[in-house]
Image 1 (spheres, chains in turn orange, red):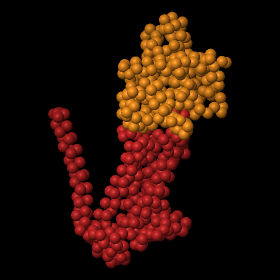
Image 2: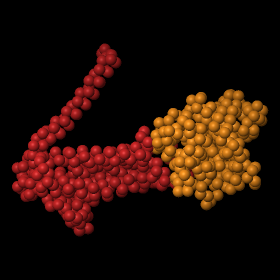
Image 3: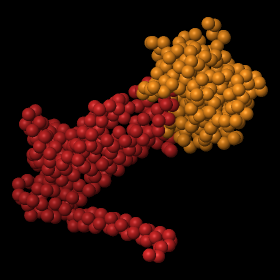
Length: 254
Length: 283
């Protein structure tokens, strides 16, 4: 498979928490330098799918994956895959802004430091570059030694984006990144996502269908662990092919 | 029965809470003031700088006793804090939740409630007798470490568990290994709770007498090695009260004891705050 075709491809991917099956035979291609949104009601498996892409679900006892997730044609669940290396290439931003109780500078420098890059890279440059990419530099460049927790919620989330960008990932996973933010901060992050897709491939899970419609190029609708429909965003929202998708996006359930 | 209005119950509750608070503080103040006022008169430079005469004379000062106390506390903490933290990290981050670990946890809880003299007997049998460490600072410190470990482990484990899961996830998602997550994120975040545990442990160690009598002896000489015997301030205080007529010196020793605890706590707090400010940017 060519890398240009799909950055990430899930092939017959299933996921279990103990006996409960959270994802059923999902097949999905994430295109490079595009924003792919995953929507669906609570418990549909969209976050599970997202967290499967950088194997964050590995830390849950009893969790088990079947099938394949190809990143540039390499199965990330193959034996011998180094999760540290995987997570360097696939960064993640969480639902609640979760900066460490450290300075703004140390929050951003954390990733490069744990990867042992602080010898070869200038941390000052990495921090500035990452904060600029996350559109936060102008607001914090004179308070880099202040705690990351002293920032507002929207700033904290952009700090978390900067922290994820500092390791120069290829893919950015965002798990409902705006659900804890006010509308203005939300717009700010959406703007940022559009800028970031020039350089990164973005997968976002969102509860908010307007958000999916506003920012994404592709949208997948999940229901009870099934990928019901996956299409160009404009297509899926204007001419859904499946009745269940239609019901969901017109607000009849969910 | 007529219903009492919420305003009245509110006032009553407030009065009750204030009352108990004031009584508690007063009792503490009376004890400390009594010791300070009665004991301070006997403190002068010669009291602090000469060794006790020993025996039943009650003569001399507390110089060697202060040094011995500091040695013992230093050694005890050097042994128990790394061990306790290691066990706490294991229990909260690495141990699977199974019968074995539940048994370990139950064991630490039981041990935390065992009277110190029982630890003293254990220390006497193992360190003093079987391992031939004799009456020594080493025997005393090892015994105290056994005594303090259960509480240190449980309190540090709670502090580590209280660190939000989101910090762990954030670190792992950035490519940190489990150990890096523990070392760079969890331990700094749990530090205030751990420091509290350490301070409480130091207080308890300084106050112990019985379990040290049977492991350190009670020599008044200045300890010259780990295998020297010795006596701590609390032990000396007990000697003075029980074996001599020097009640004033006993009170003076009490003052030195209180001040020593306050100084050690202040230093520990200051160190941890400096560390935290550097790590966290002060929030």
